Amino acid sequence: QVQLVQSGAEVQKPGASVRISCKASGYTFTSYYIHWVRQAPGQGLEWLGCINSKSGGAEYAQKFQGWVTMTRDTSISTAYMEVKRLRSDDTAVYYCARGGADFWGQGTLVTVSS
Amino acid sequence: NFMLTQPHSVSESPGKTVTISCTGNSGNIARSGVQWHQQRPGSAPTIVMSEDNLRPSGVPNRFSGTIDSSSNSAFLTISGLRTEDEADYYCQSFDSSDQWVFGGGTKLTVL
Image (tube, rainbow over all chains, first blue to last red; front, top):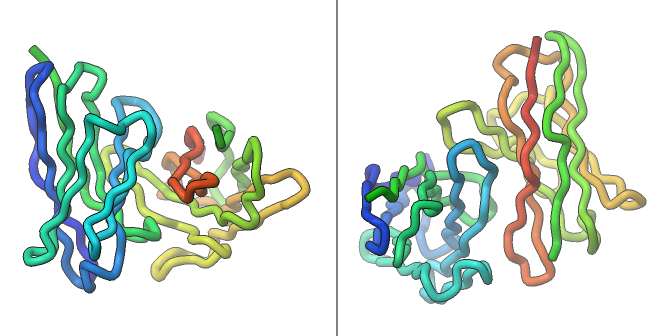
């Protein structure tokens, strides 16, 4: 069955970076994009961008261009998202989702606190 | 910027039918397609209605989706409400660059 398993919760200080992983299984990894979505506490869903799992090309929401980087490693069917220069308002649960939004990862809580 | 607007909350009794709306401020959501996601507290979203109003495997036929082009709106209808349907529901579509756009979410209370 299709599964997206994300890395565990992170606590980071303001100004630091964080990298989250999303390991796919149960389907051909390179056949689907991987999208990243975040949800701040008590808030709605916000799209950050996506990566073409085959080519590695990424597209970002304008708000996140320059400080979010999406990559992938096809040898281990894993996508990554790095967020740089963290601020307190980046505290959120970050989700990966398969293209088509038909399967989601379990989410990774990133807490930014001094 | 393309935006989707949903009611903040809706409530209905068990066994009844509820409809949640999702209105686009521009474009043609009928052409773009709209998906609906259910999110229970503390859990990741799960899709309950895909584009073209198809129910993914495992989603009961109590869930149905429609689109009204004249109002640029999509609707998720849940019939025979159960307490387990209580959740936040998000509509999702695409802007002119095919980037994902989410509605603000609707909290469904089954009381």
